Image (cartoon, rainbow, N blue to C red; front, side):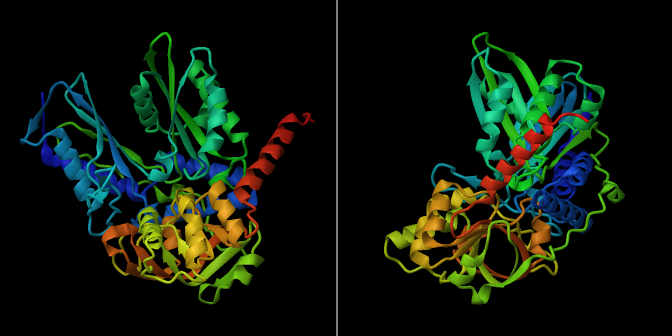
Length: 506
């Protein structure tokens, strides 16, 4: 029998969440470093360089890798011989750990969780509650696998009930392009096969807690059917040419993880959850001797990559921006933004379009302005703002026509691709969409020299801010004619990969 103190559980969870907010798992960094060396697409290589540089900056500065510090998922294995000191439930212990971890004064993390999800969607302000899965196992120890899953990747989760004879590989290859790039590749795919619908989803989520070992697996060869399937999916998905941030390239995923479970004879449930470039997870083990300790990774293991703006990048004065300047931008152009920009996420957009529909005046003037889709982390110490990377732009597509038609807005900054409705509105109004790199939030935030809330303060991180930026790096993803690099880039690299694969061996 082991006596485990509630205080030790709370401290272990809080410390682990702080740890994974600024330390990438080393296996991911090593795999991404290899992908960087092998990448042939200039746009994708530049994006990976930003992610690697951001990762090291976060590890050194103990600030979040991504502004979206996630919803906490906990997979808990409780030994049958464990006894508890105190009267808190296990859920209460873990949630108190989340509360303390996210409220740490030296590295405050973003509160992203909203209660009453179907209606009021009120921020809980402390990122609780976590999603907790508990399993009773033999023994007298406690193991907690913690992940902080961002919405950008989690929202791309897929599930299908296949027929028993259907191909899992075919479904994955068909489905991954439909996920877009808002899940911030290069990352991992977690796949759950079997059980029931909800079991398959849990398996997919849990599979992502395992270390990256695809290089080792391919080097030694598969030993069973699951390993064969992992390799087949890995090769097939990378052959799609989606690449880092969906810009087109060789590395879309770094690994595929699969867990399975027996299922009904008539069923083949398959779930798929992507892990993004800000992948975050940790395992803690408590044996009654005190809180768990996670050692800091060796920073010398990070690749020697120091991203700098491209010499071809064009500086843009946001305070003197005109439709004519926007019309001059071409897909793939690299820009460095300077001056003042406004921010706005889902809740702010919803409120604005509702106000416009009622004939009400907006609290800020968007004429000839740029809006940045972001929900920043609160600043600490001498920061103007905390990590402030882009959020997924497709969620704003349904608001884009109204914003462009009625406010005078002429450009937008977000993450990954735009959908058909967004592109149609952009082309119609001769606007532009610019892409910042997801998974490089701390790096991007270094370009923000001033920040103030100008409207909707009650929305917390979803309020409208005005940022003053200096050389903020972005890429023209959709130009004023509606041409999208997220359509042209992957198509080009899928063709190149196919040609290389079919070329005769010398």
